[in-house]
Image (tube, rainbow over all chains, first blue to last red; front, side, top):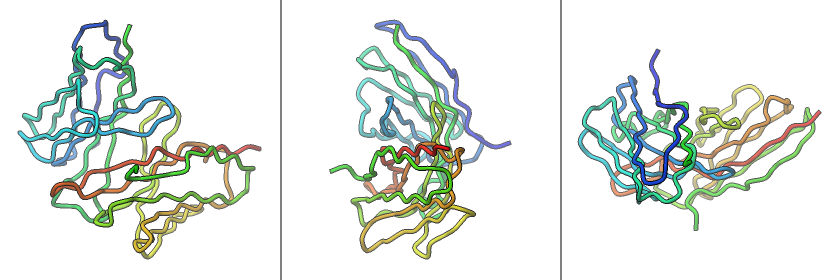
Length: 117
Length: 112
């Protein structure tokens, strides 16, 4: 089955630690995204990548970093510079720029819950 | 001004009621419009795409009004299982790309 796999589902971070959230897709999608969701809030864009070896900052990129070395993979690192990282993190993908018409549905992984302890 | 705006609700309705949600977007160059459903502590899942001609899927009807830049979702004969948050999503033009941009969601509570 095609889809997006995020891991781990639950993660605890100590103050000052960097942690990396994994996101893998086998949908052959060009574009991948990371969103953060806080309780009772909408999804806010952290980073996105429209093609391999290229990525762009979203609305709340400070304290985060990403890489896109392979089409299938878009890991997110939450660095110690992110002062309030406790949130629900969602990875998503869609076919990308070539398919910007109505068929450009976005698909989500199951999400990762990050808590600072 | 937020790029995609929704009334957060909650909308509290009895079973069998008809309920309508609206969503407005700021960028007229936007392409592709969707409604997603999100259950508590879960990832969003596609409910339906939205077209100018309108589209219907069972009890759900979605409509796009490009001139007024709004999207609507109508749910008829509400069920208890419809209780969830409904997210409006717009693929919004930004620097040569189209970025999926979310409203903050509208909460629906269907009670017996």
